[in-house]
Length: 209
Image (cartoon, rainbow, N blue to C red; front, side, top):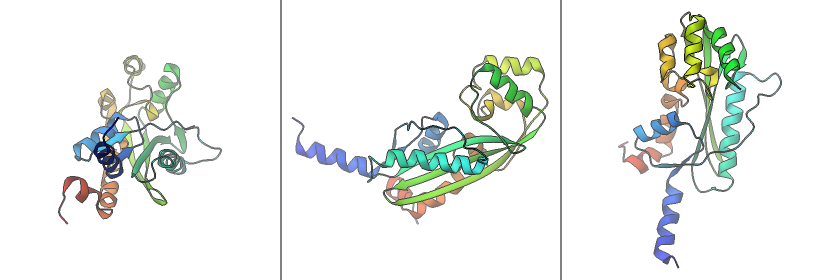
């Protein structure tokens, strides 16, 4: 039988800590770097874009849906969810379905400038804060052999646009305009003021006013 004191202590801890509604290692690394305690819960939602849905609308909808799903059963905790996608000339390039798809995406992106959109949602009960940020990434021209090599590393799989800017995908980046953090999947520069205004940073890391 668990002592009553342990139950109370665990409950308080659960109520005071953030839930990261994402399995992304990059988002996890950002929160760890900020010294914010959190636990991970991965939501299972359909990420298929809707008809005529733009990149900003997509990432905002999915970030909110992920936060909503986890928040339903954890109404006393703050839930942080995010979604990132790539858009080239208005067309969404999400995660590749296979290596052939990854090859096709990278072939289209090479030598081009594309947009990276990240939506972020903070939810607790009825309170909801929705954030969006956009950055521009330019790929240098890539040979077919370079693209084949990169796809063979398996890094593109599971990544929006079929690349990871913080990994070997950096070999092919010519320029980034905007937030590097947004390209990685969490708009830190826009998120931190909200964390501070909600007194979450002061609560967790004793940041002075």
